[in-house]
Image (cartoon, rainbow, N blue to C red; front, side, top):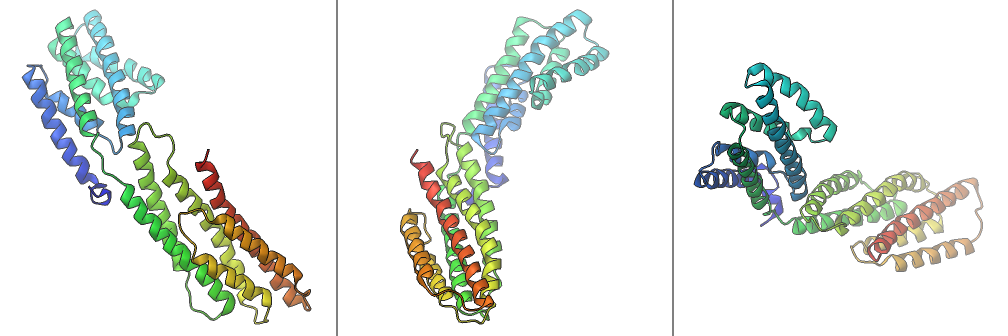
Length: 326
């Protein structure tokens, strides 16, 4: 199933509807009192990812079990009166907050209200509530085990990101050669938006794989995000360098490097080759004659800054592959 088609509420709605109906049916088959409560638990436990579902279930289970035990004791000692229920809430909420399970407040209150309605905190009532909680959470866990596969979506986003990077690097090269070239830099904004979207999906993907501690796709997207920040800085210097009409040979040499680099933007590890080419470029520039004018000196100084930033750009990707090999 395509993840992009089901990422919204529609997919969760289907799972919630199926799970809620199934929970009521099973609870009714077992002739449990307050069988509809099992559906409420399903509705409140289904989250966007498996990890969030487990966290939610854990908090609601502990809060419900605690309210069942303390509520039964509270009512049996002080009586089944509205004022006792109100006092219980005032005392119980701080306990939930102290334990960090306040997200289970609503389900725990439903459990306490069941005790209050029955007005008999016996073993049968305790088991009835416990079974309903187990059924609701068990069904929620079952239906939420079916999650969309985001792998293809992430790969599509990665291709879009790489295409934008290709355009950006090529335009940098073209601008160094022709300052009058018309480019509004929209790819910078577009690729930033694409990275943010894909990171959000990558987070969901890793949270749907409970045993996976690392996400190579997320590392990749972080790498591109860091590279993009450098490209933003470089864009300003490119504009300064290209604004000079002075024919500087070193400017053309760096433009050629950028053009070649724009053809090597992909997920593979080719950074060592590009870094070697960059070192050769630096060596060639050092061997050329010294600047003759102040303007030429400023242009070449900015070019060295661009080369330094490009080295950082390539090393960011190199670190990604070092991280993967650990």
